[in-house]
Image 1 (cartoon, rainbow, N blue to C red):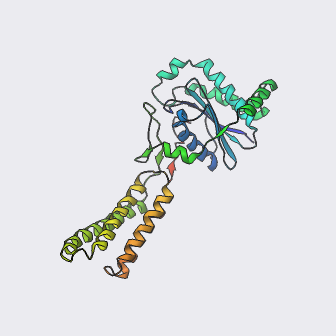
Image 2: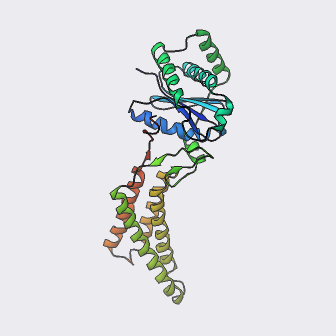
Image 3: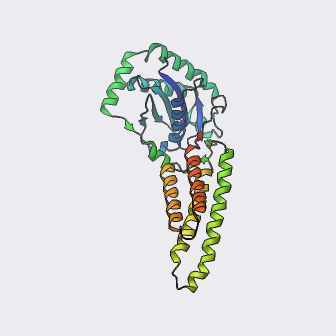
Length: 303
């Protein structure tokens, strides 16, 4: 069984991917960890030089040096010290091939794809032998980790710092890297159309009631508020489906709850079938929002 599954080299200042190992595995958790690697690479400048992200079976480790970060996904059974020995060897190999000027001038993703073969050889060496060639190197790394413990990275914080817009992660200057949401499905289009219809009905009723509210000395002001609040929530659901956002689950259920409460409040102004329609559309939108995931870039530059 391979203990080191994936390696990734990125530029620290903007997360530009420089090289990566070729991935032939389709492990679900591995794909999730690779996605997390790309998110972390966008925020490396905020992190210490070494860190880790714990997973169920796979862990992420990284070290940063001279403006370049070396990252890897390893099986949790691999000792931490051996993972960092691999990263140190990877750093040594990369700096021997490319100087800091070449790295700084790189303008497109994966400019050093030829380094992939070196990564593959190093991965194979560690996966076959289970560690570095020199035991003294392992002992030094173990002592260093004992003196300077690793920082465990919280992925929720990473997501919050990486603003994501239009289904793409925001890009640093010159990074050229993006992570897309899965394509919009037919049910998704249907929910958008229905949500727009509900929003239109709410805003029309709300604006229409404003005139009568003024005439009736503001007795129906809360009905107006309920219609307009439901309108805002419908529009927000459309936005949440189309654009990736942090805390998506919390926002989705909050919008659904507000829509349900608004419609229950408007029970006297809408019949039961109208209420069922509005609540059903909101529920469908919530399900589709939660099920629309980020799309992994599995076919990018053969990586």
